[in-house]
Length: 77
Image (cartoon, rainbow, N blue to C red):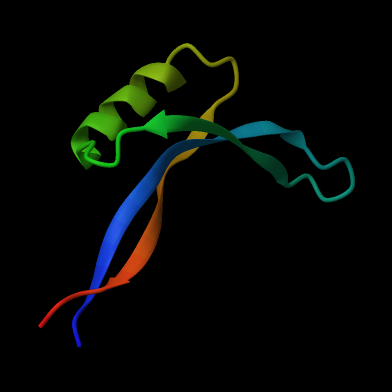
C-alpha cells in the first residue's frame, strides 16, 4: 500500500531576538509566523522573501523556517 504525503498548508516563520534574559544573559528568541503561503512555493522564493522582510525588522533575525502541514492519503496500487 502506497501512502502519499499531500501538503495542505504552508507557513513561513522568522526567528528573531526579543531581548536578553536578565539572570542568564541568554538571548530571548521569538518567532513571527506568516500564513497563507502557497504549498507549491519554492524554498528559494521563501528564503528570498524572509531575507527581504528581515532587512526591515528592528530586531536581528536568527533563522527562517518553512512549516508544512501535510495529509497522509492511502494511494491506489
